Image (cartoon, rainbow, N blue to C red; front, side, top):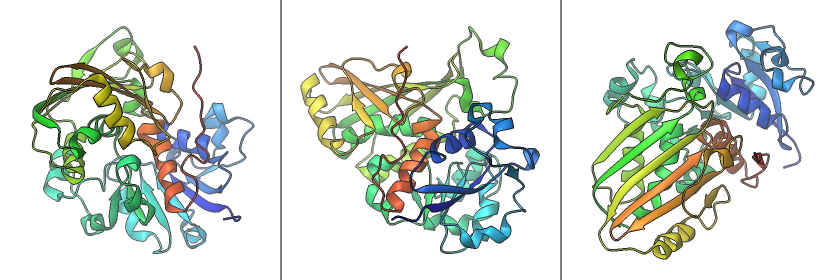
Amino acid sequence: MDKKLKIGIYGGSGYGGSELLRILLFHPNAEIAFVTANEQAGKPVSEVHKNLAGLTNLNFCSATEQVNQLSDLDCVFLALPHGQAMEVVPSLPSHVKAIDLSGDFRLRDQVIFEKHYKQPHTAMHFQSDFVYGLTETNREGIRNARLIANPGCFATATLLGLAPLVVNGLLTGRVIVDAKTGSSGSGAKAAANTHHPQRMDSFYAYKPFTHQHVPEIEQELYRVGDWTSELVFMTHSLPVSRGIFASIYAETKNELSESDVQKLFADYYGDSFFVRLVKGSPDINWVKTTNFCDLGFAIRGKQVVIFSALDNLVKGAAGQAVQNMNLMFGFEEKTGLMLVGTNP
């Protein structure tokens, strides 16, 4: 496709929107038509996101200002707080493809959604049109979709670590996920638990047994294989700005060697450029600012630990959303996503 896609971004002032802008401004097949941010409407994008100074002349607009432009678009990204995408989706023209980075359309069960997101769902009749956008486990569905529910960051890290084992029916018993995230996962607006003096040099668990990503993890595990295990999922706050690290503890039906597990994952992710297998433990510093998820292993008999590391704002949000856009429009999957980390 020689003609560039016309893109709209709803919710461009937060961290997810900032990363979408950082990626899409340099995507060879994309042109950003508008970016909304109601509280910042009228301000230059580079005034709010100073890392983009000199790179764009875009100004933020309100969500109502661009109504007349919708028919000219090819794709929109919804980087809005939970509960707002469901207000936008019904107004989109039928030819416009959409990728929702919030949790509004990830869950198929309205009761479960309202339990975990603590709000009513006003557009549940659209949910059946949404495809769950974990790229590496659902490529064909994404390729043919108009509407994508982009996965949560914890869900991405966990599912990429578990999928090969679940698909091959190798797990038995309980699976324990010990996951940790940087402060950017809480969004750009300051809150008591993300305030720097609280978070710096601190470490604590939050949302035990109640995290909203748990039902989407289990929903997707049921889809990819014979998931019969109990999931124990715990999240913790890391005193870093970005990055997710998950240690996933599982037991297999038969003893496996490290080479068995390595081959199993290599076969499953053989066509997945953005999943890298590493020796031992990965490190969030290796994946920061990139679209990679690094996976490592530790094996003892039937006990398997999978280590999963990714950038919560890129592979866990904006990068995966662009990866899905590439699939939806027939581009090479890694187009615009050759983002290299730094050392150190």
